[in-house]
Length: 312
Image (cartoon, rainbow, N blue to C red):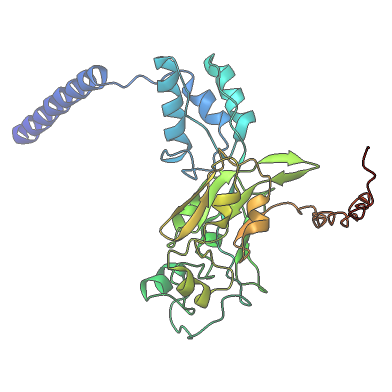
């Protein structure tokens, strides 16, 4: 009986000491939660997509609180919630937030079935990652879309679908939140987040090169009729220095591009895409033909020699 009593007393003392230690540690190492954190977290959409660059909405909320405590939340933006969400959070934190330009995912590949014919048949796991690891895929182009739909699976908003007629992914701009999940999922990096562009008559106006093929012009053209061949014609006609050519492929800087459409008309392969129908330009009229040469003015006839009367 004494042994049992002693064991109970010892265990009780140990428990008491452990509880005291835990209490002291909880007070000493306690992390105080900002009272604004729950409100900010509730204002976020809860998509946990990572498009903001932080691990989920909780990470974004924590970054916003820290930014507000430091005096600025500039550079922090939720692509899913957009400007409305960020304005609400700014009000909660008593901060000002700059208006961000709407963005959208753009598929930079125009190699549809008709322009990029299949040369081999792939028999294996039907994912872009798997096909890409095996080589160039079913076509001769080692840079274009593989069409297996990794981007579709990665999109949490149903904004991307594979077009059965072209074999290429298409983005629904109304559903796209520019979270960037599709960009990360594409093993060939053909999807880019770009500004939607100026909206005219409900149509966003933007121009981009729908190709990332870095092969030389002849090789690229052989494998895909819609490939950029790096000829430089678009760069020459651009008045805003928005086009650069690197590794045999053109790139249009959206910050400099004015969506004039000159490069679209100049591209010989149709690799440059405009999101609105370009107006048809009237053919240049030929310069007026020079007026027919007028006959020389009649000169007075020379008098015959010897007919002049001499003064006597």
